Image (cartoon, rainbow, N blue to C red; front, top):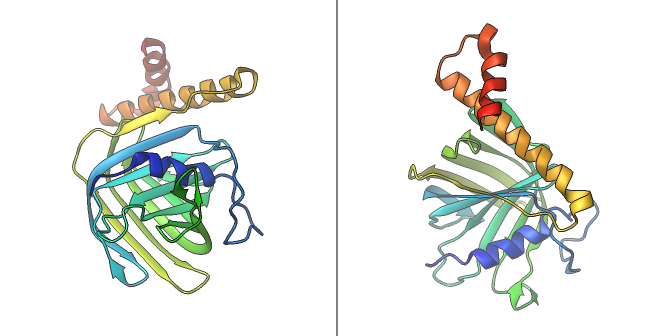
Length: 223
């Protein structure tokens, strides 16, 4: 099945606006607020949605300025080309340079049976509990795997085990619309990503801890 990334973008548009107390059938339209979007290709060794098994060939990661992050998976569903699920949570943490952990508090499910806006289904938001783990680093555009496990408030289970095919990840910084408000934020995030990339280079090149700060500063100057 050909992946419709326009449909994925519609899902992402609803991720940062969902908060505690929002009804699961909320259909009010809001503007997207995402500052980073990355896509990776590979295959799902496990993709189980409410006791149904599916295949997939890609995963998208998004981050919002407020701290909410999400992993979005277009399902290869022969009966529904709009079937997409998203694991979403606040305040993901990097436990190691190559391990990112996200606590899940919401699942977004988009399907052909959902109400539509601009001709595309609006995702159903389900309060959920679970965890996603990403092995690798987006800064150096290499992720080896993504795994997620969650259960929603209706007792439905969602499981993902994704393996990258080794292709470089496409990372996109979302352009600011309001320069006075968004440009400093975008610049700060870009500088942070640059620093993380230089830190990763220091690890790969086995730079000693006492020399690491000087190495990172020199690396950032050369970028």
